[in-house]
Image 1 (cartoon, chains in turn brown, purple):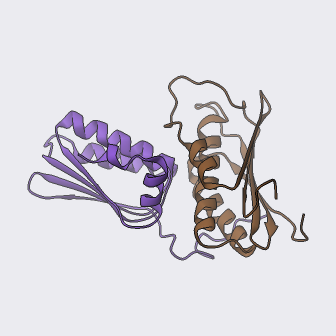
Image 2: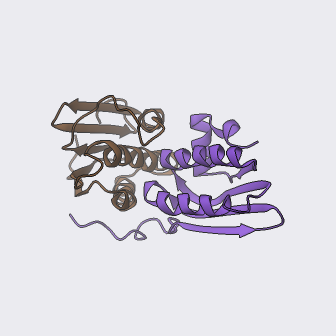
Image 3: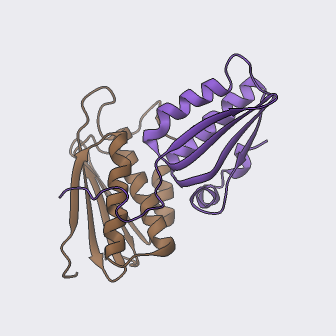
Length: 134
Length: 115
C-alpha cells in the first residue's frame, strides 16, 4: 500500500482518552498529507469510533478494556482503524448514546468497514481520499 | 508509541471550557474548545445549575467558540432541549460556521434544538 509505517496507539477505553487519541490520529493523518475538510471529517469519524468503543465495548460498571488506534497511508490517502476486544455489536436497551455515531461516521468517510465478532470485539476501519481500503 | 502532546499539531484545539452566565430571567451556557464524551459530567452539572431552583424564562447555549463536537455533544443538546421544555424555558442554540454547524447539518438536528 505504501512505504510509511502505520502509527498505532493503545489506551484504556475511557472518555478521557478519546480526545488524546483523536488528536493523535489527526496529527498522524496530517503528516500523511490529509488536510482541509477531509482532515476535519477524519477527526469526527475517529471520535465517533472511539466513543462507540467507550460506551459499548465493555461492561459499564467493570474496568475499561483496551482500545487500539492505527493510522496508515500516505499522499492524502489515509486509513484509520479503531478496534477493541469487547463484546461486539449487539442490541442494547437503555443505550447511552443517540445511535447517531456510526451513521455520522459513515456519512463523512469515503470508505467505511465495520467488523464485529461476538465476544471478541469490534473493528471500525475508515478511509479518506480512497474509495476502498486504501 | 507515545501519544503526541495535544497541542503539538493543532493549536486551535483549545481545552474544553464551560461558563454559566445569568441575566434577567435568562441563563446562558457558554462553551468553548473541544466538546466530546469527556465533557459530559460538567455539561450535566451546568445544565442542572442553569435550570435549577430559579428556573429562567430563556436558556441560551452558546456554541460559537466550540472547535470540535461529535454525537456526544448532540446527545447532551437533546437533553438540554428536553429539560428546558420541562422547565418552561425557551431554548436558543447559537453556532458559528465550523465544526458544530457542520455536524448539525450532517445530522439535520438544528431545527429540533431551538424553539
